Image (tube, rainbow, N blue to C red; front, side, top):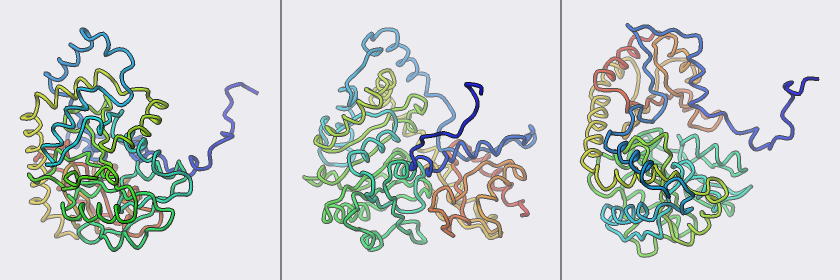
Length: 401
């Protein structure tokens, strides 16, 4: 038999075998064999990531670091560049009106690693984590591959969970509540009072509250998104996650952050040292430059995203007249309910062929068998300008399924 013959993979961790395939990669396979023309090019609203490179000034700074800062090519501190940790702490203290120390900040290789590192310190096989649905699929995948039960928490018509609905699912095996705001996939911004109430619940029940604020730079509100950092003992309960990828277009460079107690970060350090040893050094210098020099540029990016959000909301009337519903809209996302008598996981591949639109079905964001997911689609609209949004809606309105 050939040494390269394909044999069944054995042994295979059963938990890994039961974990769903990466949804964005699965969706890309729907493009195989489909031809798009200049008159009707593909509209790709499947992935929430900038497609443009970082601005020239940031790239120039990273190039300078690569050429002039020798230590940037060596292992750095496991928890990240001290200057970047200090800058995050300084800006967070101002934005949230509560003190954050550099020792309470860790830099990671993207926000997904931040989540994995934090959860590795919180939950083990057989434990439970509460997550509102629709949930971010990578959070669910981490739970599945580690034998942690992701407990779905229902959301209402406003796509927000309730404290009462969450509390009903707390058991002796519950270790954490996970929130994402602005939300991926639904786009909704959690009201500050709601986040504060979840903090109070988690604190009362001795749980961790993990708040993923990857899209905080595109929040439509000017006030702080919550007041948890104003609590003197916030580090006993709150763990915040953040990503530099969206604000500074650093997706390929993988830079994220954790804000938590220094005791928690001492445990996180074990995970990070085992997995990546240290975050990308040059990327961290880029993130630091962005934080210190590109505030106005980021504000302009936010304004553009808010214009596109407004275009989604204002232009939805024609789709609404055909039975579509806009369930949530904000940050990079519009979350829709479609009117067709076909499950979303069958409709989404059909949209590629019939409308030249690549998006993700709600079934990728909900537990298997959840009837709501069959009627839902997520549109990641951040890479469409206002004209592109109009074209997208025209194609969806013309559908006959």
